[in-house]
Image 1 (cartoon, rainbow, N blue to C red):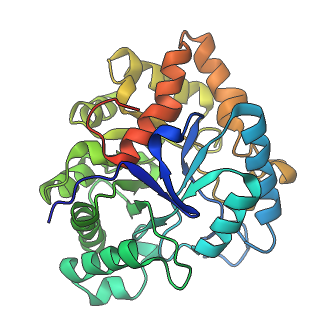
Image 2: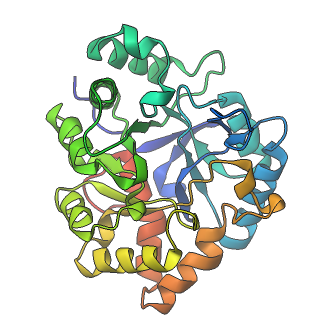
Length: 318
């Protein structure tokens, strides 16, 4: 069944009408995370050790910039903790959308090897309808469903297809992880090949790909193009990100861009000297304004686009 997209957001503390979100949205973040494969504890946001700092940052951004919503894309195999997300959301006073799905292949959990596409889709649907574990928290997005390289591996193609089928059954949208920005067109082909409309898909990490032609292709097909690693200067400078973004805006695709910072390790937090979740607001958006973006464009990029993505709206009605 192709279920209609929801008009309300599923947050970790309950349903929220999309129309009530009047401030900006961070479209791709992590508040609790464990991607530690080296044993050094770097790629971690531990609920016991780091939640206080995460909560303080979000609360400050709510007060200073009106931050209203965070799309938290930690999924299965990434150290997801829905209960911790609910606590952070309540304490910070910022709504949070949780996710389900599978990251790229090195982080796949055992069931991905055991189940076929239909079985994995069924698992995601059950979680979307019954909640994450014993928390009772309903995921509000499918993601970040991942691949690496220009073409997904067989295992990655399977979970992408499962995500698309689950999206059709639940009305939820799909956010992807495209490692270093590569493989977006192949991801979009797989997802739409299952019957999922492109406007319910966000292709991740495109600010890491120095290919404006791919960005235009994805946007022209109707997908959201996520510039979601803003501030990660070890990968690309914000100057280069801004040039890529301006090229996409000048091509007429402002309504297909999502922005975020993808905070994915504790060293990125402000209290550890990192750029923090607020880098988008404090640094990147002022540069975008200086380049000519007005308040309407900023609101489109930071609020209306992510709300349309999450609700699956095909027209700009937020």
